[in-house]
Image (tube, rainbow over all chains, first blue to last red; front, side, top):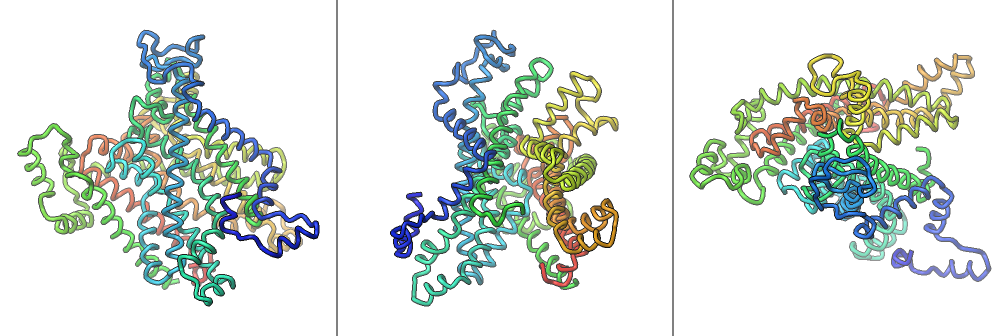
Length: 304
Length: 309
């Protein structure tokens, strides 16, 4: 919350209220209280926290080196040494799933942060300045939205070549449009508000109006867009890696694991089932937590 | 109405031009020469020159772009570099296969999605509702290619009921279309439920109930019809995404549709084929969206009279 206090200067009225002994709670405190009441969202949040711990401590938790091959042990079922069995090169599946968490979460989070940066900038520019800038940005967005998601991501990966950092870029370019649209709409509404008008009338610089008034008022939308965008990005990364256009071997990624496992479904079905379960757990957690966050930040939207 | 259609058509033409431009940029303003990218390191300079001449990439970019648009409009995008077959005939063949698969999964998704969504709305707050919505969230969160593999394991390997791959008999369509349709069925179910619950609160539903219309009729005739608008919008974008999403399913079941063509062309770096598949998949997507928007205008009078547009 410290971060947000940069935007909201202390208000005399609030201090007065506090002196009178009336408890004042800010919008974000209220939201957080609402979120805490939502059990499903809190469970998903703890699952996600666990995932983050797995990402950080992957080298210590994983029983084996994820890339260590041992061909004599290839395609074994679960055993004491290999808790969930081994893949076609005799690598430990559990360790590879653990390391896959790193790829999935980093792709999800970084690509969405990038997408939000582009989306918010474009959305604010289009909404605030209007006119030619708005039409130009809107047309560009229409063209970006004209491609089906997967084909678009594939095309960019084709151009950039496979690799994790290129996935960040491809998925950011894929998802900034929806953020930009929402922010543009919100800025258009905010521009009508008296305090923005007052700021314009009193000669406030555009940059100041945007940073002080428009962006802070979009923060809850931005948080929601990031959280709900992450599962989509994780799914897209899995799909790209499954098709062989994403993360390249030997790096462990859930999508490419499923792709490799496909040839061995009759031998060890577990190999293809497990990475998929990992994807489902992460995606569901983000989805439910994101829904909870949306309800908490914007109670008006609930059940819509 | 006419104004709306005209406006929408103009926008579509603009977007189509944008797509050709974007596709052209995608392929040509790549760091490095596209032909070199295509041939990787195995070619000597002479061969690169020759291929460049064959593909016309030795001409200046604006001229190349005009040629590309001309080819796109005339449905002639040259030949695949590797199989030497015209790109268009390969695309058409692939598209027919994918379209059939997508149509069946679409039908599956719509029937299952709308009926489950209706059921959940009717049983709001009851165990049926929570159960269905839980399944829907699961269905939305599972990658389609993973569902496909699970279906293969269960129905193909363990129960030995259905064929594992290919599309040579009608039975073959069952697993791929379920795998492709599940995600869409789940999101349709969710939006149907929300939209129905929204409509049920309206006054005209109370009126219908008050005048003694049977409950089932209230749901089907009065509520569903009005709840359809958001559903139809969703269906449109989904039909397009299904065409693209089918490439994952096609890979699992080794079906040679347009998706497999797109993936293969990109892994083989077959330049003319990449251009063709990306361009036409996007064009089909845009055309489907146009049709949906126009039909949307037919359903919703608010848009017809220019309010919602």
